[in-house]
Image (cartoon, rainbow, N blue to C red; front, side, top):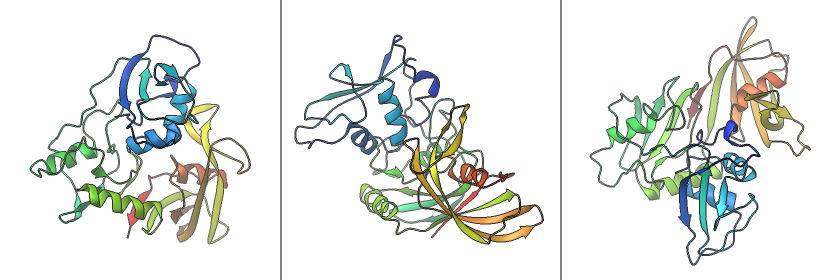
Length: 282
């Protein structure tokens, strides 16, 4: 599978160094034409569409041996290959005996309270000790669950430095139905965050495209909605409590962009997060 952090910015260059095959798939005979970035996102639930588009723009995604852009429409029997500058690392998910804070569990799903500092799934620099490694151990005796099967497992993600609830599907049917609920926004997700600064208004909405800051690729920056830079991001916030120069706010996200809360809070003023946000769900 394509790992979210495996396609790093340093690899996405315009040069053509030696590259190594990391992933390959042949398109089914009955597949209808669809953009390759959408197709790969569906096939790789642990990878964001934005990362796949970056890889395509850098010439890392090939079809039948030729590099293609993210708007290429796949055809039956196309052979798609991910090529990267570094040799392939074994990214198979191995069960690890790591304690989990399970707040709910039944035959179809489980809800885990992820702690701050834990990576959700393996990626470059974090191949072990992740939440899904711990889930694999917890469900190791469940014959129908395979942590390496994209049809089961994590339904969504939160950042490493964010604590909060993560839904894990034990069956393919549960993951399909839960995925539709997240897509249709029939689930409610909110985040509580302590923010430096005193808000003038008790509630509001922040809108703006999010993309990597050209001056610091490790940070995300807000760009105008009508620009062609980044992806649309919308955050609704409500002040819960004021502590002088620190404010506790609830954030409800219409979109789920990388570091969205941090970027939006900084965008509306001098606000920054002294502590990671906490995710809640119902």
